[in-house]
Image 1 (cartoon, rainbow, N blue to C red):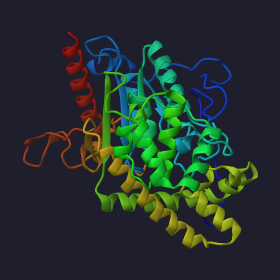
Image 2 (cartoon, rainbow, N blue to C red):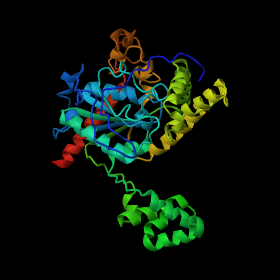
Image 3 (tube, rainbow, N blue to C red):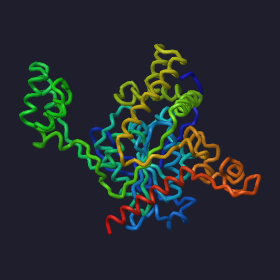
Image 4 (tube, helix red, strand yellow):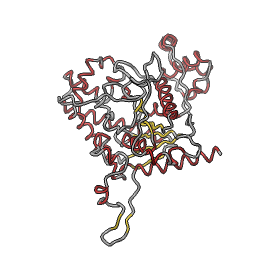
Length: 415
């Protein structure tokens, strides 16, 4: 959080600039030209005949790259997009916000390596994101990608946002006035009385909601009154909305991940995070219910207010990020459909994130220069005794194997 230069934070585009506010349109659009560019990238010739791209049904799979913060998701997503002629859809809730670049490790235009990205920079920091609006916008972006004959690649660590896109989830409506009436009643009558009312109307909901959980009791009663359907009908189910979905999870050793997080935070400070926060404050960051509480930004505001020192803010940000990682791990590991890959085992992927890639053109797609790869342990070639060595598959290669196997299995199921 130490004062420093603002640094270069270019506008992130192109992509679907949907309105994800709680009120307003959720219609997707792309800036200026009215359409999202389908830029051809280096590996398109290979990808057009790659089974992992089109499968046996002729339809591109929906690939999701998930996992905790700082595991290298953005790098892999861009590499897959280059290999499979794809476009990336953001599933990081904080990267929806315009101007929150350094503190969210948002990929820059250079790091995107020509791959179109969607749903970056679509909200002002004063606005509150809606998961249901995001679901509509992301699915529309994915449909647009497929209409261009390309592969959609969802990437992010915001678990609910990922599930909102991938799974058969319906979000019930809300009514602030109705909710307020239930809240007044629960304050007067008590949670146990309202829980008995819920049990009479929706027995299944009453079983999973405790008699002292006022917030969920109110929400269940609200949903029932608005829809006439039980609250449990809207609970997430692990059923893909698109049967061609493939989830790839990245994991790292916890000690290694902690070290990467510390390096990432320190780099953000050097890159001008405090100046970014200062500029966002002028745009109303303090009024943003979601944005102002983001890890790193909340601490930066405290530095500007004089309630935290720079050193305290850095440590609080590191600790907060590690706590977030534990929550993300818990969320994603509950999903048995995720195919987990060990990012620590990939020598070519040993970067903090896309910003640390020395040669994006050579490393981001897994094709590191021959001179760099020839001497690393396990590289293809001959050892000092003339015996042939076989390199371990890169992270990209492992991911492609998973995708192809899933696509093949899905095609066999359909036939």
